[in-house]
Length: 301
View 1 (tube, rainbow, N blue to C red):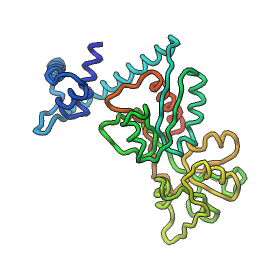
View 2: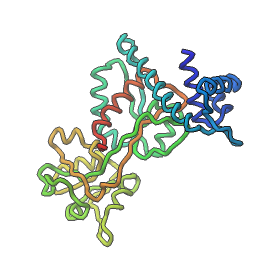
View 3: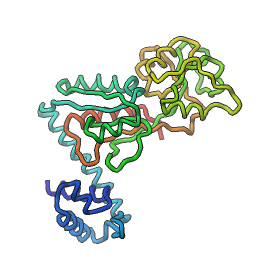
View 4: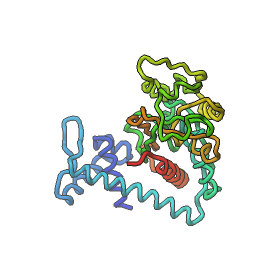
């Protein structure tokens, strides 16, 4: 346990860039943190931090060690959660703050599978605008945050990041279905159901419209669920990520075709926790299930 504490000290100093700030966040004396860092540097035989006028910065050796430390800490949390699960002690609740597209897409399947293996854990889902998701996590209203384009914040720790590409979504009997990929220009010939300007997805779509071409959707909405329902009737087309329509594809209600125009545009979804807090058993188990499902659907290397 003492070894685990030392790793936690090193991780927090690296994130804070200051022994004083790290000590405040850890609720320990600055001298204790400094002593542990100096002892570790002596043991390693090399400085782990550059001492700068405005704080500390990791050396190359420090960066290598911190990556190892974070892997170790994450592994320790997973082990504790697995042991608790095996002992039959895992119960409680976990709250996820997420966006509408994920809540209507991949998350129901994740939660369904999770509930089968962990029936005593209550799952709560907060569907929020993307600019409120991080705030909910940092305020303690959620244990996990899952969304596209979450802004970087030193108070949050990224558990995992997933990449997805945008595609055209349509009914199985749509004339464009069956192609290896389609262009945005091909889709403009059909009635479009698209995200409105309140959603980040709209900005991406407008980048794909050929210059000098009219972009006139027949429906604009902030409801991913409505977009998917309307796309089930040909000749409508909508645009979402593959992870948003996995269940509808499995049921034969929708088809997904990659957009060739969007091959260089990667949508990144991040799964985040608070940097100062370790995940408890229920939150860690759900995070692992989310990570497994998103990795299954992520863009291959």
